[in-house]
Image (cartoon, rainbow, N blue to C red; front, side):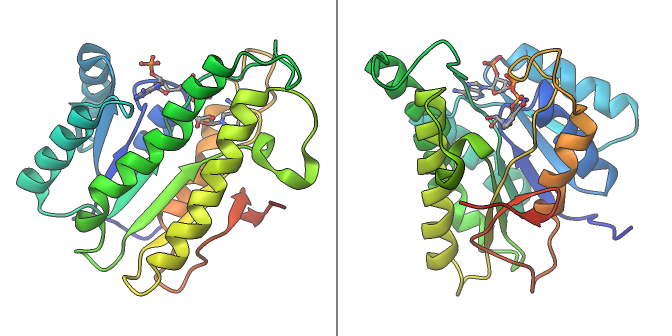
Length: 236
Ligand SMILES: NC(=O)c1ccc[n+]([C@@H]2O[C@H](COP(=O)([O-])OP(=O)(O)OC[C@H]3O[C@@H](n4cnc5c(N)ncnc54)[C@H](OP(=O)(O)O)[C@@H]3O)[C@@H](O)[C@H]2O)c1
C-alpha cells in the first residue's frame, strides 16, 4: 500500500459515520487527518480514540454552514501545515424520505442546500489556495445516487436536489482546477449503516468509506470530474 506520510487531509462531519471511517482509513495510509466536527467535544473524543491506535489525527471544530467557522479552520490548517492535500466534503443532512417534491417544505429544501451543497462549496472555496500548493490536491464530494438524474424518482426531494447540485459543483470545479492539478470527484458510498442510512443498510461504514478513500488517493493522472461508487463510474 502506498504511504501518504507528510500529506494532510481534512474531513467534514467526521466524528461519526462514514466521515469517521474515512478519517481512520486515510490516517492508516499515513495521512495526517484534520478530523472536523460541529461539536468540538465530539471531534476531540473521536480524534482521541483514533490517536490511541497510533494514528495522526488532529481535531478541529467546523460547521460548514458558518463562514467564520470555515475561515477559522482554513487559518488553522494554513498555520499548522501550510497546505492541504485532500478535502473530503462529507457533512450532510436531511435524507427527507417523508417528503414528496409536489408538497415539499421549501425551508427544508433550503436547509439541505445550505449544508449539502453550499457547505461543500464554501469549504472548497476556502481551502482551494491550500489545495493547489502541494501539487496533488484532491477534493472528494461525498454524494449519493439519490443525486443521479438518470435514475431520479420522486422521493427525498430536498436531499436529492442538493446532491444533484453538489454533482454539478464537482463538474465545474474539476474543469476549473484542471490546470492547478486538483482532481475533483463525486463519490456515492452506497447504502451504509449509519445514523443517516439506518440499521437496515446492507453496507458497513468500512465498505462505504473505501470508495471515498479511493478518490482521495488517486494518482496524479487519475480521473477528475467523475461520479463513482467503489471506484467504478456511476451515471450522472
Ligand atoms: N449512509 C448512507 O447510506 C449514505 C448513502 C449515500 C450517501 N451518503 C452520504 O455520505 C455522507 C456521510 O453520511 P453518513 O451516513 O455518515 O451520515 P451521518 O452519520 O448522519 O453523518 C453526517 C455527519 O455530518 C455532520 N454534519 C451535519 N451538518 C453539519 C454541518 N453543518 N457542519 C459540519 N458537519 C455537519 C454530522 O454532524 P452533527 O452531529 O453535528 O450533525 C455528522 O457528523 C453524507 O454526505 C451522505 O449524504 C450516505
